[in-house]
View 1 (tube, rainbow, N blue to C red):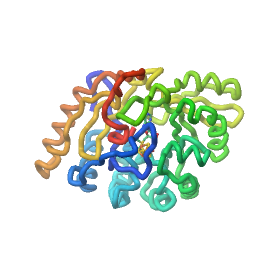
View 2: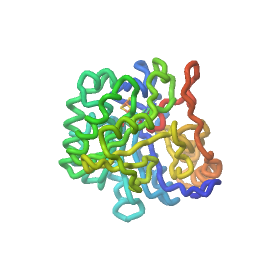
View 3: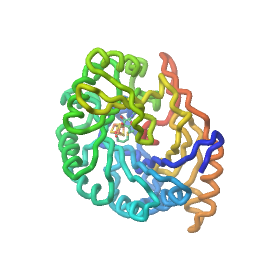
View 4: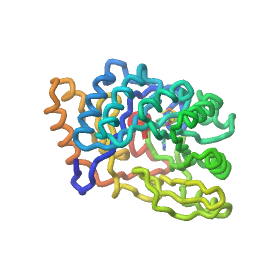
Length: 328
Ligand code: SAM
Ligand code: SF4
């Protein structure tokens, strides 16, 4: 699959549920209305859809959500998808999770061939954690991260930079992660979804974060890539890696290799644009994949060049859907 700008689409992110056991302030409103279950793709349909993308050249698949590990029977989907790892059709099957359920799933995830996961963690302070996630249990997440590491899964921590909330914590997070062998990636907030509150207050450009970190640490740019938009530095003092994802201050679209599917089978061509294609209808219309493949090809042919996120006072979110719809 090659888009109109010559970018090869080899990475698929699939949101397996819009539900979550947290209510992070920058991601969801406290009173979210979730989709009726009948609108969701079944796990068998998700498997078929992912397999169609793998047959078309996708090499890496990331499950996300909402919280992927709260989807009922999620393990059966992972066990089934692991066949593509065994045949070599898929290079990597991975997941982005809030870590709340990891302690009970870690061994099974490792057995499915999952070698790396991203865990979202914005603070190491228990009270702050509660304030940010509203419903989260910090100790459970700590247990989950430890269990994943013990199962041999490489854990990368993702931290959203939140002005006035966790901006005094990056040094501590860096040391905590690097002592435990985790990479850390800091992410700029993106204006998605109508949350309770004003995003202008939360937005913290990573250029500023980097400047501040450089007063403490020696950062050296390195060419390390994980296939995502993060740009990495090595920190001399800890020997660990730190990634920056900067959708707002630096446009990373020119190297975009990915598309996203929601739990209702909607294909989004860009995280920061509304254009999408319905894959559920062609998926359900017949047992063969002919119509589905045509719908995918047609959609890829209109993948946009890039996003145009803007954060400003009195502005509606650039993209009305919530991050939990497409899973980041
Ligand atoms: N529940 C899982 C988790 O939290 O990792 C997976 C889904 S969550 C939507 C994926 C990632 O998106 C998380 O790292 C989260 O912090 C991030 N995220 C959510 N809303 C965001 C926003 N408005 N701007 C930037 N990142 C956001
Ligand atoms: Fe849930 Fe992840 Fe959104 Fe937090 S960021 S509310 S954990 S989906």
